[in-house]
Length: 387
Image 1 (cartoon, rainbow, N blue to C red):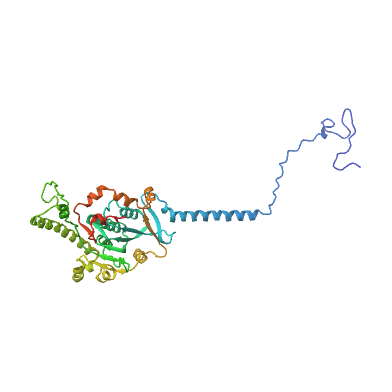
Image 2: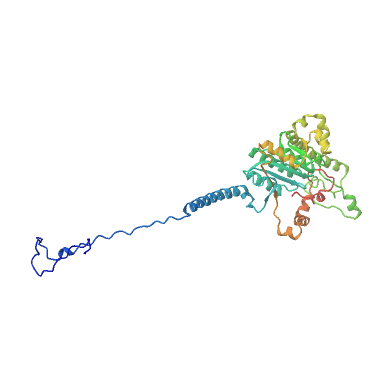
């Protein structure tokens, strides 16, 4: 029996048409079928058993990456200021929250104030002035004072810092803040509760001194005479080696005292701006202007200082006036980078260099007015120069 899908058997014929075949096509033509068009290959999709899990994992990784990027940008924003771009000054964490954006800068004034323009204090002031994140300043003073000009220079620039940035400026006194050291604390202006002194602080010594010494008898003993040539009889004013008669001595003393008095008037005017209530108290001012040094409690009673407290108390007051949370603020301090000489001399290269600087020694021999609480010659007092 033939399969159903094949055509019935046809007998071979050598010519003509088979019975019942009316087609004009030759015999066998019907056996040739046209080729079917090629079918496209079938695409088989195999379902992966963990495809959904991988998608979830990939999404989680992307989320973690985004969080990491945001976190690192946050860290950069908080810590990028620690990258020391200025080789003349380093900024370090003093206290507070290291990751906080807003800062309170602690500016240190330490030692005798002799050369303020080229000193490190001015560098600190400039750094705080340029830093937009600094919202308040605490000036930490541990100084017996210095020259009139240098003291006023620092006072001027601290006052300028407070006024230009429109930020609070608070003073924290260390072991001593006398004369020129007290003078620069007046940069706080008339801000209330702005000057803090530790319980062991000595302050005051509001006054002016021009050190003067008479060595003429000593030189005469060694048969040494001063033969300096001058263009005028007052050109050598204040010289410790010059022999003077009574009239010349009296005239010289009057000139020097006038210089002291004019400088002292300037001191009192600065005190009037920084301590207006005390300045209006005649009884308190009579005691203050004697040049006396006071303990912290005595100074607080007179109105020379506002509060007894430490640097952390001054920081809290600065944060309060700046409208900052004292627990969420970064308190920074500035340090001078050590040099190779500092390493070689154990950190005393500046002192070693100063002792060998003939120019500075000669400069100290000139008559000069000081806001300084010492009777020691300036050449000795200068061993603790401003840092």
